[in-house]
Amino acid sequence: MGRIHNIEGKKNKMDSLRSSAFTKHARNITVAARNGGGDPAYNAALKLAIDKAKADNMPNDNINRAIKKGIGATDGEKYEHITYEGYGPGGVAMIIECLTDNKNRTAGNVRHYLDKFGGNLGTDGCVSFMFERKGAIAIDKDACPLSEDELMELVIDAGAEDFAAEDSHYEIIASPDDYMAVREAIEEKNIPLISGEITMLPSNYTAVPEEKAKSMEKLLNAFEEDDDIQNVYSNIQE
Image 1 (cartoon, helix red, strand yellow):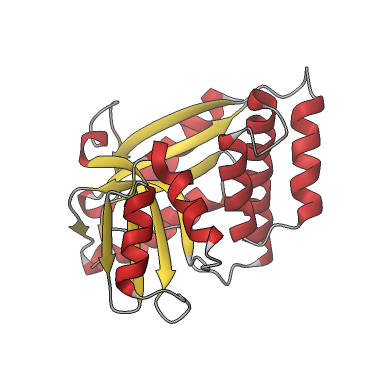
Image 2: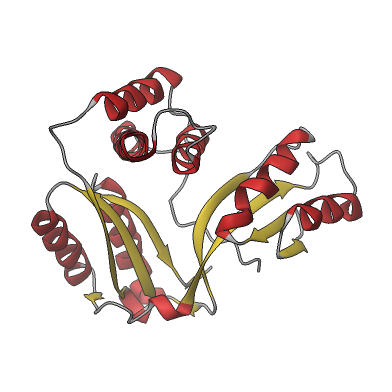
């Protein structure tokens, strides 16, 4: 199994979940624009936020409104990034990244979801040592115009740390600092991406017991429906 692990859920979301995803993207874009300006060419955080929103098919009008809100706002909503660590059903390690204007509300919700579905909130550092922040890119083999060797040479020269050929796709790992350079090298060759993001990759995986699988699914759905929760990373063994 490859190292790239995505638990953002299935792509065929219900309308309510799609709306929640757009709300999260808009919030992330607004904060990135507020902190670093509205031009993604000079604001790497904004470019990453836009890329992630586009990967979820967020309309350009929504993206532009979020940028304008960020660069035009001086008062109003004050968001802060908060990260929680804990364990899901079966002892799965979890990192929950949030962007919130009400820390007490968010902390209470995260604790409630974990308690309700058989997990528990941990202390800072209790699971983060099991993860590394990396840039991760996946490319469909059939859609790639380059040979495996050509693609590997391209991404390694651009700064990638690791390259792997899986059954149906290529996986490329880079440090967060080199991720954009690697991605731009790929895009310059008009190579389409299955996915590309800054993520947290686990050093090992934990299998969820069959009797706890439903609880894990409900926990992930609760996280996804909460507008304050931006990203959830785990070491679930698929």
